[in-house]
Length: 620
Image (cartoon, rainbow, N blue to C red):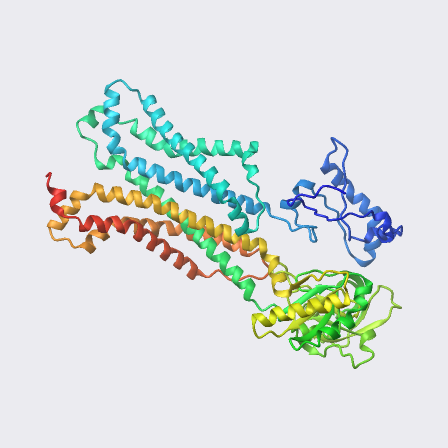
């Protein structure tokens, strides 16, 4: 018995068995160098150089591996990766557990930085906007002997105290909301990570950096006021540096707009993945696995039981299932010139009912037919990708041999299957060769439910049929459509987090705009009163107070659109099949930001426009 492996391990096993007890894994045949079915771990001596070890592998390949594959014109390379890098940096196929991607950590880190930046911009905007109100305080303190350094230290300390309080509040929120966050995004983050040295150091660094960043400009600007000008009232409204505020607000709008565009493109791609025609009918197909030879031999009995239920329309078996890979064999195939040549081919074992059960179509020739006795030993199918790969003008009748020996039995291509997505849309459609086999691992059951209750009944019937055939094996099933979408689970989770960050950015931006709009409206109270006395209507006054924000949004749209197009185009490029960027999303995001800005600033603008001008002008 060994301790449970942690959830974040790259290799999670419920049980371990010695390879010595399974002769297949200890095959002494030199040809075993050509097998790639196992994970290989190498423990280097302490102080050994991993790069030097990697540099010696080509010589190993030349000595043991190349002699096997050179005859087939296949090149083999060995690549090493550090154990701790597997989860985030491995791009190898067939990893034991789903891997992450270091790039997304960088992206989320950048987004978190954006959030902190927007919050800091809010603080700087409000502090500089209200700087005039504290100018008298600064002037009096300077007259009483305070130096500029003292004032700078005061303003920076104020900012740091605000930030420290915010950090404590954020830690409390993380502790309270982490369980909800884990459930929402299917994560296993542990609150104990907060107390680790790197996280605490990071929090402290963020607190200091944000505090200094948020309070830097007010500290340097306000502390530089000349007391004589302050006390004589010579500081004008422009002393608050409106150009800086406009620049910072524009940056806020640009970042928020970019996040909205990113979330929209991600959502569009996820919808594309859900709705794209995969080349087969993925709906209502129940799939489960037959473990072991004895179970596979009972498939016929299980199939008869399942077909007794009217909710079951078809049952088939295969050596793979959509969403998974398949073995690649080296074999002879007839080239476009008519010669038998050696190729590496993905072999797909199917029974006679598989194509019809999965809704796959024949586009040339005919399907495999149980009524033709020779089909079981002589007939094969290929997909359209194989036809393109081989350059066949007419694939029907082309010869294949499941070996590289010229004396091996010959089979003939009798039909072409329309291309379908066997793997995720990250991958191009592979060239496939289908052959009849009746000793397969995967069972596919097509259901025809008319209601959710029918679906529940069909699953229960499948389970009872399974239990009758395999009483000692638990019934574990999945649906082809949900299993296929699991290939994009990480992308869906990232999309949700990206959207959440976008909503947070909008919220924080709105808070800053609300405060800034309140201050601006208050600052222009007398101007608004005079304009109303001279005949200005409410619409004109609201437009007067909000037009600057509309201009800033329009300016922000330029860099946001360019960055959104560039980065989302690169992200979509990681998929072999993807939607095109819909520029209507850009327009909708811009319209959304404009509406949010109008709603946020328009409230105070309307309030100021509706105010009685007598009150604002009474002191004049």
